[in-house]
Image 1 (cartoon, one colour):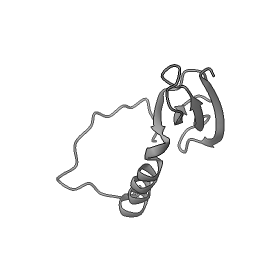
Image 2 (cartoon, rainbow, N blue to C red):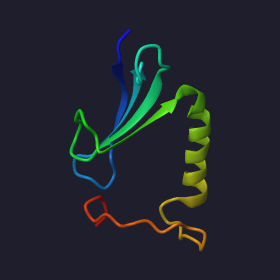
Image 3 (cartoon, one colour):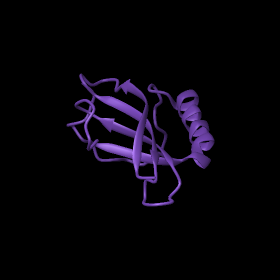
Image 4 (cartoon, rainbow, N blue to C red):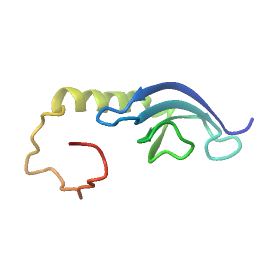
Length: 98
């Protein structure tokens, strides 16, 4: 079998005009006989072959990732105000926001 991508779902990327989050299944992502993964890719200008960001998640880790995303949604959310433990990150004005 060769490396293939099967799209599972395309989601509009909130805060962008044409941005898309694509969730897909990739076979043999790292060469022959490598285990399949779920791929989450972000394309800010629509669906392309080379997304700005992507992550590969082994199927064995999906439940833990879903748990972490649920915690992020329920305990943090978009209105969360960081505490002193938060790590400052550089601001990229070219991405999202008003």
